Image (cartoon, rainbow, N blue to C red; front, side):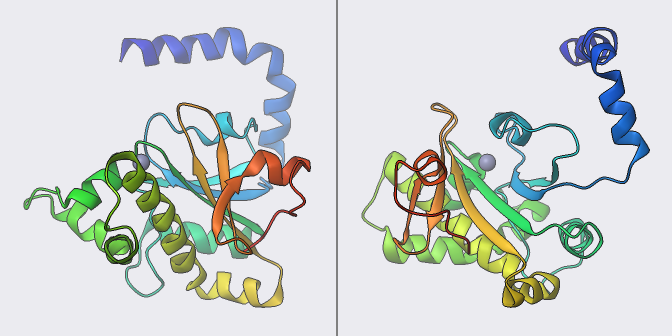
Length: 219
Ligand SMILES: [Zn+2]
């Protein structure tokens, strides 16, 4: 806790003062985030750091395993935040980002959630399709290869779950909303994006900056 308290002090005394005008402007206007960023609660995955963005740039949802309850399965914080992001903030770009060494995916694969953790067990139901797809498609993989494959499959399952929400489905059908499936590697800092035309995750660096002929593929 000491590190956190010291950090708050340093923010207020060292980091905030030279950026005071920026923060005043942020407070004076309604927020206009450019994207909804959905990722894991993992302490090593920090959306604004990995995208080098600032306060005000991204609306965020974070939870164990970057899961999105399909529409109708539950009414809770995730659903409310998606509806608010899309209908009130008019966000058009929705990113779901899984990551390497994800403890939630590891637990999901191992079926290791203790019986008495009812919340977590219920939560992982939103990734039941991931379990089944991995068993069917990646049954022969082990170790890191299995973990990476499962994390990628889970991103795709959650992209599908996200698209079941009426406000999202409406925007997808009119071409106004775009969903991106990402995989972030903690050790390398790299991000890969699912490319629908290739059916695989490709380095976002190549896609975005032209070393690959592919345009950024949107869902
Ligand atoms: Zn995680």
